[in-house]
Length: 309
Length: 272
Image (cartoon, rainbow over the protein chains, first blue to last red):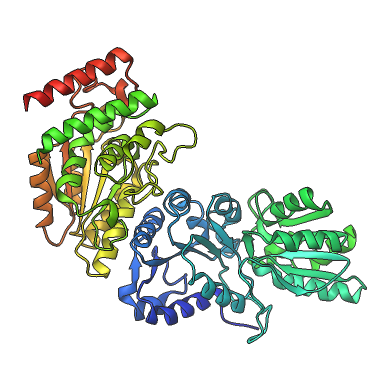
């Protein structure tokens, strides 16, 4: 079992890159511990900004820094970053087109039993609906690293959501297929396509392996690039397979699955089932328990595919 | 340059622009004009061909609805074509939107939703400190705008980080769209509020260019803390029938009112 959380990978990449690039700045809102940014804060005090518990200010200050040539990474719990500071993300970052990378940590239902105040099951909807804002939900530590390294090369706004805990690897060290804004083909298949993002890509992969044992050939797409979404990969899947099942740690409206349905409906109609969190506060539990409850884990995906195919 | 004459010329441009476009926030434009004139014609190191200069001074109009005043100043200083502004402002497909937009040369940051500009200015001032550059950062808020809680996050951070390269203005014209600030949401004791957060506070008659200029100079020489200039202004300043009337927050002059306003401003100009 992998023990390195995606947020730790972000800290490590930024720590490494910031040694060469003094314009990289990390900002936290009393969240350096939970953000996994402690070592960055300790080793790069001159490139670390603490704003206190003030998410609106976090994002506004980041935009001001970016407008002066800095490369700010605002790292804060996704729940607060994607809603409390939503207007700063809209006006100061997206609309002003500033080079701010918003890192939503402990995203989705990572905070589990802490409840809906701490869940960010609407962040794809809130962030993705803003013109200029890109939205990424990387699946594992290797893809997170590839994504952050790639985003460091551009100067446009982006929101990146990662979970709280370490997740199983989807890819292997040294073999991480990655092209920015292109879905990663995790497994080829011809009967059904499972499109997943974030932590649930691992479940989609496991489900595909189980389905293979039942004689069902499942394609798995890692749609870490929720926006701009990989339209071509979706249309191709709609043409190649009879069914598309989307899986995401997000509510049912305005998420990745909604986008997939929108694209298939217009370009290549096919049956699309969205596996999502409900349009309601979720049950109390840990992430894995919540996924299981709502049928988002491998077992739930297998059940949906076999029922719907 | 005679800045008082310039301020009257800019006021005429504002009235003209709003009259032609059929929209605009005339009251707040006329209250903030003198601040903009002092900054753009005397104090700030900015120029149309220097917007990429990392050492340029930064300006953020947090009360973005006073964009007509900013556009008139920028146009007059040659940041873009004045005729294009006057012909297209707020019209179909114009690049001149009714709030500041950084696609327009001279505008640093998009504003319009209140309570954003000071945080951005704090970030700009921090960047200046990090890079050891000596540019200064200016932000202008409205007094009604100070009801936005996000401002006080920025006020706290500005003092915490000792951003003495940052000067904020509060355009204290005592009116907002629904009435007086004191009726709508208490804004008195701005001086005490900012001082309590650790800022250097200077309170001035805000339509007096000499007073503005002196305050800006004082701010430049204040070390270890940011400065706020509480500019006690008159909303609609310069046009008798617009002054101190909440209804003129975004009212557009009729032809007769337009003529009257221009006449008054011309008369004041002649008296200088």
